[in-house]
Image (cartoon, rainbow, N blue to C red):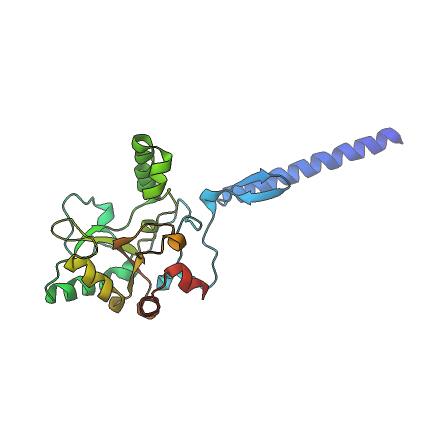
Length: 238
């Protein structure tokens, strides 16, 4: 009787082991990898997907920052090269942007030109692989601490969404006080864009002020963000 009980117990343990393996492998194959910490299973940071409420990729309202990332296989829809001028040296990949922002971006650049402001594309879409190479290179040359201050880790760069682009001018000197940067700050909302990393908001965005980095969110959201002088993070939490 005692031996029979032991045999049954062993069979139960084996069955539970097989069940765990099947469940774990199934999740892993779906792109979800788990780490065991204490008694809790937690998603690896690299696989943490956007999970905010009211975020819709088709309208541009998707949040990517140091906390909310994208899967390494994420690629925006309809990657296209907009009909704007790009700075010399910009590679083929970074000339692309998500299809949804092409027309608004072209309208923004053309309107600026009509008003005597020349805006030039500098860096648009960046794949997970490209960001990984960029980040790794900076870590090797400057160390992880300095790299983290200026370069997003792969999967946590907004450039992977295809919804943003860095803008520059003919002098490649795009800072607050230049006519191009000032025009962009005052007018980009009219076309559905925002200055994604505004001055004095690093405590919220995690990124230093970048007057050249614009992000498409649609005209309604852009106007609200501009009028209220808030960030995308604050807008999504309102």
